[in-house]
Each structure stands twice: as C-alpha cells, then as structure tokens.
Image 1 (spheres, helix red, strand yellow):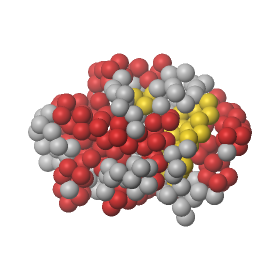
Image 2 (cartoon, helix red, strand yellow):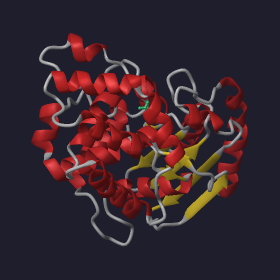
Image 3 (tube, rainbow, N blue to C red):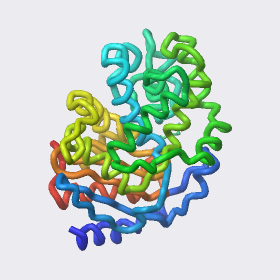
Image 4 (cartoon, helix red, strand yellow):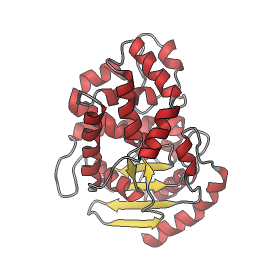
Length: 304
Ligand code: GLU
C-alpha cells in the first residue's frame, strides 16, 4: 500500500504547476503550493500517510457535510430540508443567482455557501460560540483528536473580506430562509471554515463516515441515516461544479475545500484525506483530484 501510494503521489505532483493557491481569502494565499500529502485509513484503523500529512490547513468547505449532519441531528431533516434543497446547481459554490431566479426560493443544496450558511444556522445554540462548540465536538470525536481548534488568522481574514457571503446571508434573511442575527450566523460559518486539521484528521473523519457514522471501536457519533444523506450530497455536490465528472472518474463521496484539502471515502472500506493547496479553476485541489482518481482505479473503489 505504502509503495503504491507513494507512486501515485509522485506521479501527480506534476499537476501542481497547473493550479493556483487562492487569494480571495488573503490568509489562504500564504499556503505553500508545493505541499502534497495523502492519508488513508482502513476499517481496522490502520493508517498510511505519505507526504505532508501533518501540515495543518483549514477545513473550509470540508466542514459543510459535518455542519449538515449536526444541523439534521439538532433540527431534524424536515426543518433542514424545508430551508435547503437537494439538487446540484452547476454554478460556482458562492453564486447568488439561483437564490433570486428560482421561486419559491431556497439554497439548492447544503454544499454551496448559501446552503451551508443555512445549515450552520440550524445547529443548536443561542449564539455562534455555542453552535461552533457543538460542531467542533463532532469534528474532534470523528477525527479522534481533541486538539482540533480554529485558525484565528484565517477566520479573521475571511470575516474581514466576506462581502459575497454577507450578501448571501442578508439576501436569505430577506426571503425568509435565515432567521435572526445574520452576522452571528455568518460568524459560525466563518469559524467552521477555519477549523484546522491535517490530512490524517480528515482521513479519520472520513473512515467514520465510511463506517456509517460510528467510530471504529463501535461508538455511534452520527446516526447512519443522516450519514447516508450527507454522503449522497458529497457524491452529487461535493466537488463543486465538477461533481459529475468526479463521480464518473473516481466514483467516491468526496468534499473539497478551497484550502486544498479533499475528504473522500469508500463506504465500508477506507477513509482518505488529501492535501495540496494549488487549485484548479473550479476550486478543487488539482493534484488532489488526480490522486483520488488514481487511488480509486488502483483499489477499484468506485461505488458505481
Ligand atoms: N470559506 C470559504 C468561502 O465561503 C469556503 C469555500 C470553499 O471551501 O468552498 O468562500
């Protein structure tokens, strides 16, 4: 396994030069584009790590399936899906257009920013601090790492520059999707995006999702029916507007984030974490995508 994984990583390092580290959140631009790591955990908890697997990065959109699961656990599926839809958009993750053109209007799914801001608002808590503590607890339990916290620099950097997410938030309050204090809801979203992990952490979270929401020693963290919903969204909407192509080429539930991480899983088989911050034009880690495609082909992991 180790040898093959090393080979897959080495042959895909080539793609880095075709990608770019994002700068729209200023602090993310400090990432080293050459960083590249992959961690794979099997159902026995055996982990193989190759490359930069202890480098920390922020979850960004990888937090979205976790916020979705916490929101469903807290508010129930009826309330969550009254406010957020179940369909892919084909639009960029931060697009506002369909919120205005579709009637009646609600975010199309919980993996785009509008939908994720809404699910963050449906986590129990009377303010952002209480909501983020619940989410952090979920992330820490699934990752088996109590040290996981928030990168304050990246949180502030996003919060100070998030005009587009703010626009989404206020627009959604106007149409009745968000209720209450928009700044406080956005604060939860900015903090969840700044949760700091390594690719081994996300591989450990992913293996819990591959194990239907249970830790490998059998503790239920998320009910299986809620994990099934989240994993399905990862297939249909997890890789931005490249989700269809990724489903064909890799066939795995996966969620990427603009920090360059990708969390992927093969149900009942393995959890995978990849990190490489140079992104393609849709916001996916360019080497990360290719690594997952090769890994899926090598181990015959496609769920289809
Ligand atoms: N915090 C980022 C934003 O809202 C997350 C985007 C992403 O990773 O897709 O723009």
